[in-house]
View (cartoon, rainbow, N blue to C red):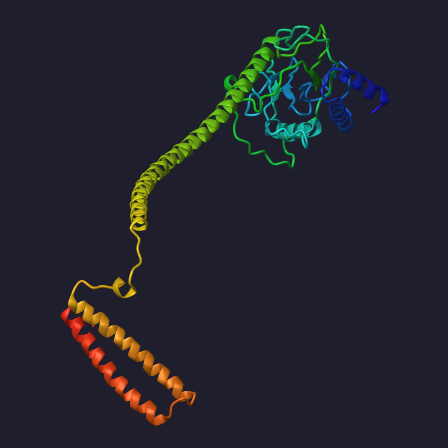
Length: 378
């Protein structure tokens, strides 16, 4: 490819496209790959069997191009799942356009493989009425803003015969042309075009293609409607997802509020119990303080022997027997200590221990009888 062609492409893209470098590279790769394509406004006659037209958006390659079949005067469009009555091309490659891996070369290669199996045009029968001449400027000026005309790239992709080794693509059928859901909404600024085959972007007096300005306008309107519909569907789906999330959050908040209300009720009940206990304790404290003050005001020296008194003679006898028994036990203990230290001899120790043991037995028997009479535990 000559440097002048690359310069013309660069001049055409400058100050018009958002991604000049990538678009230029993509166009030059296509022109380098298919030598039959040239960056000029011209007609190529019957050099190519299936003329095509590629509209490249100014956001290329981040937006998929729009492809059309441009039949000559002796051709008619054969509608199929890939081409509608207006000549607009629908391919999964366009539907799944990825700016990182998709390019114009791949698009044309897919067209070659697809149209070799299902040709989009056929020869007009002899004797058919002539197709009315196409206006000089076949492309609509709306809904795109008015801008200076961009250069168009003409050429044609020669397709191999139908007995090629490529398998028929198993794509789902496309809907009727009147309700075609063109994929992924693309922006609609002014476009450059890449035209193929015998279709010419220049104003030519002899242009007799069967695609009229009205056909392209209707096709573009349908595409815009489908894009808007897809955009609305996408927005609706996002809104529904957001509403579902908000409903889930609302349900979680309602459950949290119920738990908090339950916890608050329990805390209030516990607080009431604590306040009640505090009042009781304060009353008891005041009562005890009064008793202490009364005791301090009437305090006098007490006899230790009179400090422990009983309510009945039986209990007095039980207390006295218990005290004597404990004293006897202590006496036996200290006698043993004296014997161990050799303070007492064995005979004296045995004599006193026998007497104390007899006394201790009598005291314990007395305590047992007293406890029985007083109905106390043995």
